[in-house]
Image (cartoon, rainbow, N blue to C red; front, side, top):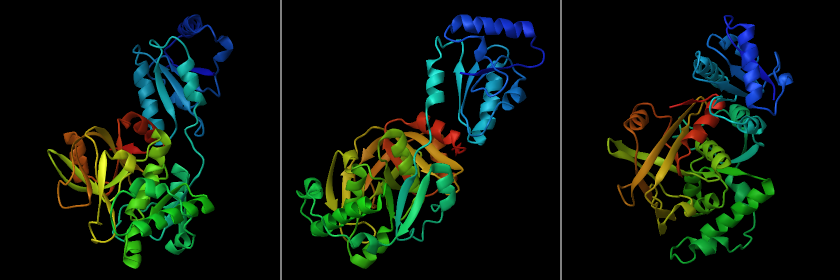
Length: 382
């Protein structure tokens, strides 16, 4: 651990020496050699007016711990520098030196790797033409979120043999509906495609599929998402990217849903598919927009949820905490539906400054974890 003391020019050498002595008395595992003038990974803000001295220590590829206290505008200086570095996507975290009794939390943060291996995202077909705000630049997506898009056609998937797995049967065989065999075969072919091409996630142009083959992929998508293979509908690459990153950070696959209506009482979301393990119960219906094939009509238990959305330029993300207050057949819309109560500010932002239609909903409160990750990636949270 290499510590740089950032202080304004009015702080005397005597005060700096005393600060070092007190620090070493408190944290006896370190010695005077841990204090450096260059190449630091911990910056201790001893006073305000030290911002530019701290910035001189920063290198873009590294991450930094900030130590600060309530005295002498120390925390103010650390906050200003953190805000500046957040914009550049440089990982930092502020620790209150008065509240920690060992340096383990700092070392843990320095040792963490917030990056990830490249995720191969298969785009099956093209994004649906109504997705005006949901198609990011491929190169930018790779650079910022380590997601590599590879384009395929539906024929690349359907060429595989049905390997006759019984996994689909275990989930859906007890439901009586016409397209069961087609859905099961599609699911099995998707699994073979994923294994053969070493795919980690998919975004599928499902309306093109319905138009050509006269049935839907809603149930296979629901089961893929249950099995931790992020799969987005309509070729929505913003949703697929968000699903991938949320899966990395939480271990859960979120539900991708339409925004149907909002008012002061809450927001209604719906879609014709959802991860099966997110549902308390479900039945099989037909696809809402086309009236064809099969769709998941499920109930989601009343609970706290995190609502999330990326913008196509990878500059902003919407992030809000909500509470499911109703689930079921709320309005004439896609089959699985929920009404989510959110703050007045969140509802205002969704209404006046939406980043797009589809949003991702995940049970639990992950707002702090997601805010920290995306802020450190250079996003602005709205």
